[in-house]
Length: 448
Image (cartoon, rainbow, N blue to C red):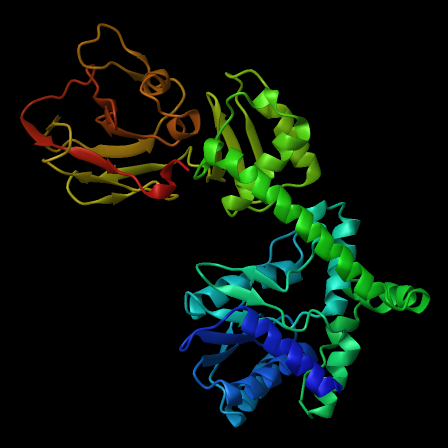
């Protein structure tokens, strides 16, 4: 079988394994290199035999290269010449320090691909056998376990019911170049791929060729090891499912009888839960710190941060939370009638006579919203003495990190009202009086 027929047979096999239904979307994630251009060409050939599917190509330009606008225009024109519906968009990325530019671009592309495609779309990626070997070695360099060493799957679930498909994963770069050349498929050469200061390029140009020279089947053997690691990870995930069902509820994780489990069991369970929540994986050092802290005394104030998320513990439960903005200085006047939007996904304060606590205020008195501060006192209705507002909220089940972001309504310098506890019995308005009924409408991000 020649290379043109060989790649097409692999492509057809990969698509048919997913059993696409009439009208289902087949999307080519288009970068412009020989890999994705070959996938596009294979898709055009497949379309001739399977017109019942919906076809689309998507190119997203991060402006990482000065010539990228010209590349985007070339891809738009090429797709038009092949009568292939295409979306070509600019997708700038706000780069974060200490994060790979390539990884940030990839994350942004995947998010946008989910937004631009049908919920059950099959998204075709151009990664190949040589990419698989590089990914395996990069994960090995990072000290990854079976999940990382599994590298890339030929098929993988994406968001919703979407699937990622890599139809060329069994073919190396040289075979794809031969295919594209034989089929006279035009492609773009990105000179940044020659920059060996980038780890993947260093492996591609300086390491893998040397390994292939010594062991010609190196990439195929690495792919076999990656497949074995994937099978081991799949088995582990399956065995952990029952534990997860008993312990995990959304972004909350039960620590009951936690120390009766072995350390590897605990580590695997936490990683499986974090993955289920869609969190980025912590480094090994962060995971070790987390595992140590989960066995601390129940009243210990656990807080472990990595990336843009954190884990906190309350009583015998772990909570996965985003990092919160520093709102110590937040202070906002309120007219007592219109909706007051609170910062950082905390929701809003509204006046609602049907649901709110009745609060008497003097005419013309200034109302202000701030968040709980250390030293705030509050006396509940029917109580003889005021006590710490934070402790009072703790008594009704408000978690420590929620208390630090808890709204407090101040009237003429006095704490007058706070959600869940109601009106402060120490608050004394002057007459003449009017009444308002404050309510806190919490966003879902307020406490998680």
